[in-house]
View 1 (cartoon, rainbow, N blue to C red):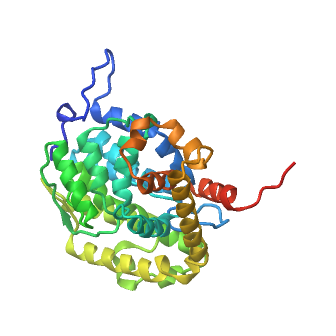
View 2 (cartoon, rainbow, N blue to C red):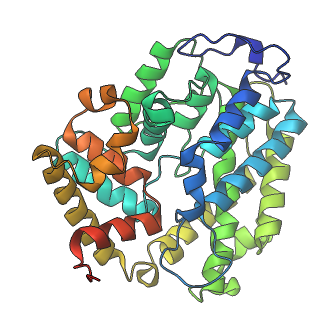
View 3 (tube, rainbow, N blue to C red):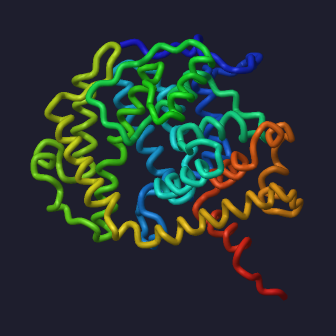
Length: 360
Protein backbone atom coordinates (compact mmCIF):
# COMPACT_ATOMS: atom_id res chain seq x y z
CA UNK A 1 0.00 0.00 0.00
CA UNK A 2 1.33 3.44 -0.92
CA UNK A 3 0.99 6.42 1.41
CA UNK A 4 0.40 10.07 0.51
CA UNK A 5 3.38 11.79 -1.11
CA UNK A 6 4.37 14.97 0.82
CA UNK A 7 5.89 16.43 -2.34
CA UNK A 8 2.32 16.67 -3.68
CA UNK A 9 1.07 18.59 -0.64
CA UNK A 10 -0.87 21.78 -1.41
CA UNK A 11 -1.19 24.97 0.66
CA UNK A 12 -3.52 27.93 0.11
CA UNK A 13 -0.58 30.33 0.23
CA UNK A 14 2.73 29.36 -1.41
CA UNK A 15 5.66 29.25 0.98
CA UNK A 16 9.37 29.52 0.33
CA UNK A 17 11.32 26.45 1.42
CA UNK A 18 13.65 26.92 4.37
CA UNK A 19 17.25 25.99 3.65
CA UNK A 20 18.32 23.06 5.79
CA UNK A 21 14.79 22.16 6.96
CA UNK A 22 14.73 18.36 6.98
CA UNK A 23 10.97 18.18 7.50
CA UNK A 24 8.54 17.44 4.72
CA UNK A 25 5.21 19.28 4.34
CA UNK A 26 3.19 16.95 6.59
CA UNK A 27 5.86 16.96 9.29
CA UNK A 28 5.77 20.77 9.27
CA UNK A 29 1.99 20.62 9.73
CA UNK A 30 2.39 18.36 12.76
CA UNK A 31 4.68 20.93 14.37
CA UNK A 32 2.38 23.83 13.52
CA UNK A 33 -0.59 22.11 15.14
CA UNK A 34 1.40 21.01 18.20
CA UNK A 35 2.53 24.59 18.84
CA UNK A 36 -0.87 26.16 18.21
CA UNK A 37 -3.02 27.77 20.88
CA UNK A 38 -5.89 25.47 19.93
CA UNK A 39 -3.83 22.35 20.63
CA UNK A 40 -2.79 23.73 24.03
CA UNK A 41 -6.49 24.07 24.91
CA UNK A 42 -7.03 20.31 24.56
CA UNK A 43 -5.66 19.75 28.06
CA UNK A 44 -8.74 21.37 29.62
CA UNK A 45 -11.47 20.20 27.26
CA UNK A 46 -13.82 17.40 28.21
CA UNK A 47 -14.06 14.13 26.32
CA UNK A 48 -17.28 12.58 27.75
CA UNK A 49 -17.43 13.15 31.51
CA UNK A 50 -17.30 16.77 32.67
CA UNK A 51 -17.30 18.39 36.11
CA UNK A 52 -16.03 15.24 37.81
CA UNK A 53 -13.37 15.26 40.51
CA UNK A 54 -12.16 11.72 39.77
CA UNK A 55 -8.52 11.50 38.71
CA UNK A 56 -7.63 9.54 35.60
CA UNK A 57 -10.75 10.35 33.58
CA UNK A 58 -10.00 11.02 29.91
CA UNK A 59 -9.81 14.55 28.57
CA UNK A 60 -9.63 15.59 24.94
CA UNK A 61 -5.82 15.73 25.02
CA UNK A 62 -5.61 12.05 26.01
CA UNK A 63 -8.06 11.07 23.29
CA UNK A 64 -6.13 12.74 20.46
CA UNK A 65 -2.85 11.24 21.69
CA UNK A 66 -4.39 7.76 21.83
CA UNK A 67 -5.86 8.19 18.37
CA UNK A 68 -2.52 9.36 16.99
CA UNK A 69 -0.71 6.38 18.48
CA UNK A 70 -3.30 3.81 17.38
CA UNK A 71 -3.63 5.17 13.85
CA UNK A 72 0.14 5.41 13.34
CA UNK A 73 0.58 1.83 14.58
CA UNK A 74 -1.86 0.63 11.93
CA UNK A 75 -0.51 3.02 9.30
CA UNK A 76 3.05 1.78 9.62
CA UNK A 77 1.93 -1.79 8.96
CA UNK A 78 -0.03 -0.61 5.92
CA UNK A 79 2.79 1.54 4.53
CA UNK A 80 0.98 4.88 4.96
CA UNK A 81 2.46 8.30 5.68
CA UNK A 82 3.15 8.54 9.42
CA UNK A 83 3.32 12.36 9.58
CA UNK A 84 0.06 12.88 7.71
CA UNK A 85 -1.67 10.45 10.06
CA UNK A 86 -0.30 12.29 13.09
CA UNK A 87 -1.25 15.74 11.80
CA UNK A 88 -4.85 14.71 11.11
CA UNK A 89 -5.15 12.83 14.41
CA UNK A 90 -3.87 15.60 16.68
CA UNK A 91 -5.89 18.25 14.84
CA UNK A 92 -9.18 16.43 14.36
CA UNK A 93 -10.95 17.59 17.56
CA UNK A 94 -9.61 21.15 17.77
CA UNK A 95 -13.09 22.54 17.01
CA UNK A 96 -14.78 21.00 20.05
CA UNK A 97 -16.33 23.59 22.40
CA UNK A 98 -16.32 23.35 26.23
CA UNK A 99 -18.12 20.42 27.91
CA UNK A 100 -17.87 17.80 25.22
CA UNK A 101 -20.69 16.76 22.93
CA UNK A 102 -23.28 18.40 25.19
CA UNK A 103 -21.54 21.73 24.62
CA UNK A 104 -21.55 21.06 20.88
CA UNK A 105 -25.31 20.44 20.96
CA UNK A 106 -26.02 23.64 22.91
CA UNK A 107 -23.82 25.77 20.68
CA UNK A 108 -25.42 24.24 17.60
CA UNK A 109 -28.88 25.27 18.84
CA UNK A 110 -27.71 28.82 19.52
CA UNK A 111 -25.97 29.17 16.15
CA UNK A 112 -29.11 28.09 14.32
CA UNK A 113 -31.21 30.54 16.33
CA UNK A 114 -28.73 33.30 15.46
CA UNK A 115 -29.15 32.53 11.76
CA UNK A 116 -25.56 31.49 11.10
CA UNK A 117 -26.22 27.84 10.32
CA UNK A 118 -25.33 24.69 12.27
CA UNK A 119 -22.32 24.24 14.51
CA UNK A 120 -20.14 21.28 13.57
CA UNK A 121 -16.92 20.75 15.48
CA UNK A 122 -15.06 19.55 12.37
CA UNK A 123 -16.05 22.73 10.51
CA UNK A 124 -15.02 24.74 13.55
CA UNK A 125 -11.62 23.03 13.51
CA UNK A 126 -11.04 24.35 9.98
CA UNK A 127 -12.21 27.81 11.08
CA UNK A 128 -9.82 27.79 14.04
CA UNK A 129 -6.80 26.53 12.11
CA UNK A 130 -7.33 28.74 9.04
CA UNK A 131 -8.91 31.92 10.41
CA UNK A 132 -8.10 32.31 14.14
CA UNK A 133 -4.61 30.95 14.77
CA UNK A 134 -1.65 33.34 14.39
CA UNK A 135 -3.74 36.44 14.94
CA UNK A 136 -6.22 35.51 12.23
CA UNK A 137 -3.67 34.61 9.57
CA UNK A 138 -4.07 30.87 10.11
CA UNK A 139 -1.48 28.11 10.01
CA UNK A 140 -1.58 27.60 6.23
CA UNK A 141 -1.84 23.83 6.62
CA UNK A 142 -1.83 21.49 3.64
CA UNK A 143 -5.01 20.50 1.85
CA UNK A 144 -4.43 16.85 2.76
CA UNK A 145 -4.33 17.62 6.50
CA UNK A 146 -7.31 19.99 6.44
CA UNK A 147 -9.31 17.47 4.43
CA UNK A 148 -8.59 14.68 6.94
CA UNK A 149 -9.62 16.91 9.86
CA UNK A 150 -12.82 18.02 8.13
CA UNK A 151 -13.84 14.51 7.04
CA UNK A 152 -13.32 12.70 10.34
CA UNK A 153 -16.44 11.40 12.03
CA UNK A 154 -16.16 9.56 15.33
CA UNK A 155 -19.91 9.07 15.44
CA UNK A 156 -19.97 6.96 12.29
CA UNK A 157 -19.01 3.29 12.25
CA UNK A 158 -18.11 2.02 8.79
CA UNK A 159 -17.02 -1.51 7.94
CA UNK A 160 -15.15 -0.27 4.89
CA UNK A 161 -13.99 3.24 3.97
CA UNK A 162 -12.32 4.28 0.70
CA UNK A 163 -10.84 7.69 -0.12
CA UNK A 164 -12.59 10.09 -2.45
CA UNK A 165 -10.30 11.92 -4.85
CA UNK A 166 -9.85 15.64 -4.24
CA UNK A 167 -7.23 17.86 -5.81
CA UNK A 168 -7.92 21.51 -4.94
CA UNK A 169 -9.13 23.78 -2.17
CA UNK A 170 -12.34 24.14 -4.18
CA UNK A 171 -12.91 20.45 -3.40
CA UNK A 172 -12.41 21.23 0.29
CA UNK A 173 -15.00 24.03 0.09
CA UNK A 174 -17.42 21.61 -1.56
CA UNK A 175 -16.91 19.11 1.26
CA UNK A 176 -17.44 21.87 3.83
CA UNK A 177 -20.78 22.69 2.20
CA UNK A 178 -21.78 19.03 2.43
CA UNK A 179 -20.75 18.96 6.08
CA UNK A 180 -23.00 21.95 6.84
CA UNK A 181 -25.85 19.88 5.41
CA UNK A 182 -25.13 17.10 7.89
CA UNK A 183 -23.29 14.84 5.46
CA UNK A 184 -19.84 13.35 6.03
CA UNK A 185 -17.86 13.01 2.80
CA UNK A 186 -14.96 10.53 2.69
CA UNK A 187 -11.41 11.86 3.13
CA UNK A 188 -9.18 12.32 0.09
CA UNK A 189 -6.34 10.14 1.43
CA UNK A 190 -5.95 6.69 2.91
CA UNK A 191 -4.39 8.36 5.96
CA UNK A 192 -7.52 10.44 6.48
CA UNK A 193 -9.67 7.31 6.12
CA UNK A 194 -7.55 5.50 8.70
CA UNK A 195 -7.85 8.29 11.26
CA UNK A 196 -11.62 8.41 10.76
CA UNK A 197 -11.97 4.68 11.37
CA UNK A 198 -9.45 4.58 14.23
CA UNK A 199 -11.25 7.40 16.06
CA UNK A 200 -13.80 4.90 17.35
CA UNK A 201 -11.03 2.44 18.28
CA UNK A 202 -9.39 5.08 20.47
CA UNK A 203 -12.45 5.97 22.55
CA UNK A 204 -14.82 2.98 22.63
CA UNK A 205 -12.97 0.95 25.27
CA UNK A 206 -11.52 3.97 27.07
CA UNK A 207 -15.01 5.36 27.69
CA UNK A 208 -16.01 2.00 29.17
CA UNK A 209 -13.04 2.11 31.57
CA UNK A 210 -13.94 5.69 32.60
CA UNK A 211 -17.57 4.70 33.17
CA UNK A 212 -16.50 1.74 35.32
CA UNK A 213 -14.19 4.01 37.36
CA UNK A 214 -17.10 6.40 37.99
CA UNK A 215 -19.46 3.58 39.00
CA UNK A 216 -21.80 4.14 36.06
CA UNK A 217 -21.49 0.57 34.73
CA UNK A 218 -19.86 -2.71 35.76
CA UNK A 219 -17.51 -4.72 33.60
CA UNK A 220 -20.00 -7.59 33.66
CA UNK A 221 -22.51 -5.31 31.87
CA UNK A 222 -20.50 -5.40 28.62
CA UNK A 223 -22.46 -7.39 25.99
CA UNK A 224 -21.38 -11.02 26.03
CA UNK A 225 -20.81 -11.50 22.29
CA UNK A 226 -18.85 -8.25 21.97
CA UNK A 227 -16.79 -9.22 24.99
CA UNK A 228 -16.09 -12.66 23.51
CA UNK A 229 -14.80 -11.26 20.22
CA UNK A 230 -13.15 -8.05 21.38
CA UNK A 231 -12.41 -8.52 25.08
CA UNK A 232 -13.68 -6.74 28.20
CA UNK A 233 -10.86 -4.24 28.85
CA UNK A 234 -9.70 -1.24 26.86
CA UNK A 235 -6.37 -2.88 26.09
CA UNK A 236 -7.96 -6.05 24.73
CA UNK A 237 -10.55 -4.10 22.72
CA UNK A 238 -7.94 -1.85 21.12
CA UNK A 239 -5.67 -4.79 20.28
CA UNK A 240 -8.51 -6.80 18.71
CA UNK A 241 -9.71 -3.89 16.57
CA UNK A 242 -6.21 -2.85 15.49
CA UNK A 243 -5.27 -6.41 14.58
CA UNK A 244 -8.46 -6.84 12.55
CA UNK A 245 -7.97 -3.57 10.65
CA UNK A 246 -4.40 -4.50 9.73
CA UNK A 247 -5.47 -7.94 8.51
CA UNK A 248 -8.44 -6.80 6.42
CA UNK A 249 -7.39 -3.42 5.01
CA UNK A 250 -5.86 -3.42 1.54
CA UNK A 251 -4.96 -1.10 -1.31
CA UNK A 252 -7.54 1.69 -1.45
CA UNK A 253 -9.63 0.62 1.55
CA UNK A 254 -9.60 0.58 5.36
CA UNK A 255 -11.80 -2.29 6.50
CA UNK A 256 -12.95 -4.55 9.35
CA UNK A 257 -13.98 -8.18 9.03
CA UNK A 258 -17.75 -8.72 9.28
CA UNK A 259 -17.75 -10.45 12.72
CA UNK A 260 -15.52 -7.83 14.35
CA UNK A 261 -17.49 -5.00 12.78
CA UNK A 262 -20.76 -6.41 14.13
CA UNK A 263 -19.20 -6.75 17.60
CA UNK A 264 -18.01 -3.14 17.41
CA UNK A 265 -21.48 -1.93 16.45
CA UNK A 266 -22.96 -3.85 19.41
CA UNK A 267 -20.39 -2.30 21.75
CA UNK A 268 -21.11 1.17 20.41
CA UNK A 269 -24.87 0.71 20.98
CA UNK A 270 -24.07 -0.36 24.52
CA UNK A 271 -21.96 2.75 25.11
CA UNK A 272 -24.73 5.04 23.88
CA UNK A 273 -27.46 3.39 25.92
CA UNK A 274 -25.54 2.80 29.13
CA UNK A 275 -22.96 5.62 29.15
CA UNK A 276 -23.46 8.58 26.80
CA UNK A 277 -27.24 8.89 27.37
CA UNK A 278 -27.18 7.76 31.00
CA UNK A 279 -28.90 10.32 33.31
CA UNK A 280 -26.00 9.91 35.76
CA UNK A 281 -23.74 11.53 33.14
CA UNK A 282 -26.21 14.40 32.56
CA UNK A 283 -26.73 15.63 36.13
CA UNK A 284 -25.29 19.10 35.40
CA UNK A 285 -26.28 19.36 31.75
CA UNK A 286 -29.29 21.65 32.26
CA UNK A 287 -27.07 24.14 34.10
CA UNK A 288 -24.47 24.07 31.33
CA UNK A 289 -27.20 24.65 28.74
CA UNK A 290 -28.46 27.68 30.69
CA UNK A 291 -24.92 29.05 30.95
CA UNK A 292 -24.42 28.66 27.19
CA UNK A 293 -27.69 30.49 26.49
CA UNK A 294 -26.89 33.38 28.82
CA UNK A 295 -23.31 33.77 27.63
CA UNK A 296 -24.20 33.67 23.94
CA UNK A 297 -26.90 36.31 24.39
CA UNK A 298 -24.68 38.59 26.49
CA UNK A 299 -21.75 38.40 24.06
CA UNK A 300 -24.05 39.15 21.14
CA UNK A 301 -25.26 42.25 22.97
CA UNK A 302 -21.67 43.30 23.69
CA UNK A 303 -20.83 43.18 19.97
CA UNK A 304 -24.04 44.78 18.73
CA UNK A 305 -23.75 47.64 21.23
CA UNK A 306 -20.01 48.00 20.51
CA UNK A 307 -18.92 47.76 24.15
CA UNK A 308 -15.19 48.36 23.91
CA UNK A 309 -14.41 46.89 27.35
CA UNK A 310 -16.30 43.63 26.78
CA UNK A 311 -14.51 40.30 27.30
CA UNK A 312 -14.99 39.26 23.70
CA UNK A 313 -13.24 42.42 22.48
CA UNK A 314 -10.38 42.60 24.98
CA UNK A 315 -9.62 38.87 25.13
CA UNK A 316 -10.43 37.73 21.61
CA UNK A 317 -10.91 40.38 18.93
CA UNK A 318 -8.02 42.52 20.16
CA UNK A 319 -5.65 39.67 19.29
CA UNK A 320 -6.97 39.18 15.76
CA UNK A 321 -6.47 40.99 12.49
CA UNK A 322 -9.28 43.56 11.92
CA UNK A 323 -10.17 41.77 8.68
CA UNK A 324 -11.43 38.84 10.76
CA UNK A 325 -14.20 40.92 12.33
CA UNK A 326 -15.05 42.64 9.06
CA UNK A 327 -15.91 39.41 7.25
CA UNK A 328 -17.97 37.76 10.01
CA UNK A 329 -21.41 38.31 11.50
CA UNK A 330 -21.66 38.92 15.29
CA UNK A 331 -23.06 35.42 15.84
CA UNK A 332 -20.09 33.87 14.05
CA UNK A 333 -17.65 35.82 16.22
CA UNK A 334 -19.46 34.72 19.38
CA UNK A 335 -19.41 31.12 18.11
CA UNK A 336 -15.65 31.28 17.55
CA UNK A 337 -15.01 32.86 20.95
CA UNK A 338 -17.02 30.28 22.89
CA UNK A 339 -15.72 27.30 20.90
CA UNK A 340 -12.18 28.49 21.59
CA UNK A 341 -12.68 28.41 25.38
CA UNK A 342 -11.61 25.52 27.60
CA UNK A 343 -14.01 24.15 30.21
CA UNK A 344 -12.47 26.17 33.05
CA UNK A 345 -12.14 29.31 30.90
CA UNK A 346 -15.85 29.04 30.07
CA UNK A 347 -16.72 28.90 33.76
CA UNK A 348 -14.42 31.84 34.48
CA UNK A 349 -15.90 34.03 31.75
CA UNK A 350 -19.43 33.19 32.89
CA UNK A 351 -18.51 34.08 36.48
CA UNK A 352 -17.07 37.41 35.36
CA UNK A 353 -20.13 38.22 33.26
CA UNK A 354 -22.90 37.24 35.66
CA UNK A 355 -21.62 36.85 39.23
CA UNK A 356 -21.14 40.04 41.31
CA UNK A 357 -17.49 40.71 42.09
CA UNK A 358 -16.30 41.45 45.62
CA UNK A 359 -14.58 44.84 45.84
CA UNK A 360 -11.40 45.46 47.79
